[in-house]
Image 1 (cartoon, rainbow, N blue to C red):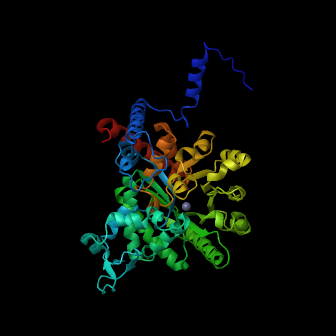
Image 2 (tube, rainbow, N blue to C red; image 1 turned 60 degrees about the vertical axis):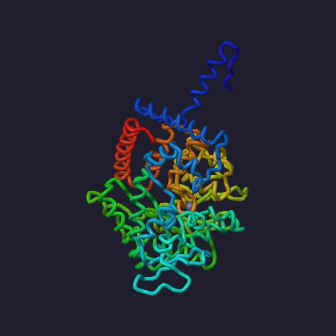
Length: 475
Ligand SMILES: [Zn+2]
């Protein structure tokens, strides 16, 4: 062990050396212009802390706290180029306020007037609205509903008055939004609106985790709708890219049959629905498979190892991007199985700290963690953002990306909240934020050709952001 000779003469010099050695988490070299913007970022962090009166909410209430969302630091994070969102679930892509804006343009959606369930139903415009319901657009115009009602009832904000545990409340939200996903006419507009919104928030690539539960024909039709939305958005944002990760659930009995069906649909789609958005380079559109849901009450990943090993043998091109380690339980060993199954990335990976040997293996193999800061906190895994174990993973060479998971239910702005939380909670520099954004493209499911293009596009977006901040500031 290194023997330091510490004296009162050399104490301050040694101390400064240690501060410097530990000051930059990720070591990206900053240009002079970036150093100036980094200085501004540090000022914005202090400004936000001061505005909180010495009591920064490290449990970030992003959906409703105006001190936070109206701060200059939040606006900085909103404008920041963020690279990719690699872990976001189908039909939970848009924050409640944005979803309300979109729904107002669709006459077919009706909502109940008794304000008990906040259920949306689909009634074609030429048909009569059933008793107890009102067209959504009319409900918002007449004040029967307000945006804050929707935030309260379509997001986790409503959990505190529900008497339910957070996971039960959270899963109900998916049911509440079911009418959105069962409406293919709405789907194209939903995705188009979402992709444009993502581009405006500095997100240039998205990987959506999607359960293909219907027949092969219906799944193919749905994916074609998504591709049409994608191609339409690409006309305005040529750098934007989008991929699908098929998903199933970690459950047995009847749901196991559904998971197998989802897997086979994913395999079929990978082979037959290609991404032709770049005429010079046809690529995969469906890039892999995931297994989702609450880990501590479902079957462990270990139970799916035989199925997944067999699948890997038959379909070697099918990469795995499995949810694992979203747990505080001492019995959760999903990260061990994820490693043995050769996952390309893992969803969350929160409890990697329990496994020091595995920690080294994940770092060495560059298996990236899709770290969902807001989701982890909302679902009760990390009460204080400063204690999120990802800060340690970042310092010890584990590949890590920030992801949003379920913005519709947990966030004010997709991915902005996660960058905000990490910036303030982990005290990050501009170099750290840049590296996190680059990581999200490096560890994405894009192929080498696509990745090179994406990183080049990121460089341009980043430089434009730096120049814009230097010229116009953050107001
Ligand atoms: Zn997830």
